[in-house]
Length: 268
Image (cartoon, rainbow, N blue to C red; front, side):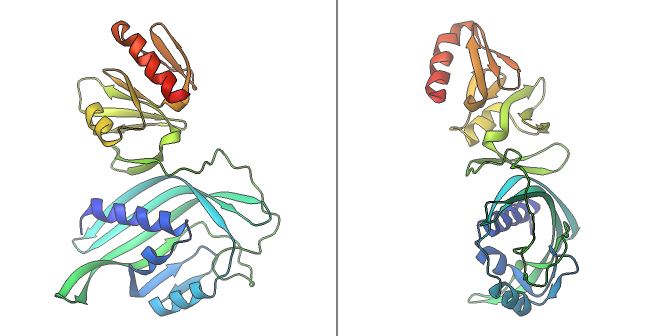
């Protein structure tokens, strides 16, 4: 069970879950799985018990996830602890919204299962803990469908299917919406980048060329040391680009006309 694989799988399960596609989650839970939360004092144990409970859940809620921060700890060769941290916006049929910060803790265990090709090890979720507990309403099953007076501003939540996934120098993995990224710059004399987002700056072990190759359609190279998100361009002048946060990136004189034309095409 490789760390990178289990992080990728953990992200996939929760992003599909909040699209109301529960199949990837159900496909990876252990027979004796333990579910804790999100409702206060809510604990469910056993695969069949969890499936029956979800089968009783009826709701018309939709969700938008924010950027995801992930850390994975190897408890042993066969056990991985994965912690996800993100904002989630819940939309109610009434038009109200609720935005809160959520922490999700998976415990993964490599368990021996029988397949057509014989026994093999497969990662399964043996516990799942959602730690943002809210008051429980006896009319609800999983989600707080009947909570009253729910409203909070959207806090810049935007629907998007475009994301980048990077491993930061602090060991965390981040899944970031492209729309949140302002620009990426090379850290001089190193194989590292700084990713400037609307909220913070992340340092990742990556080269600008490698990043550009992975995500060729999202960013524009305006300089040997910079990629920018055209959606955040505020103005273009000789020989610099100003972004929505006020940052100015240099543009080489010999490439100014070409880059200006490319940016205008992207923006328009």
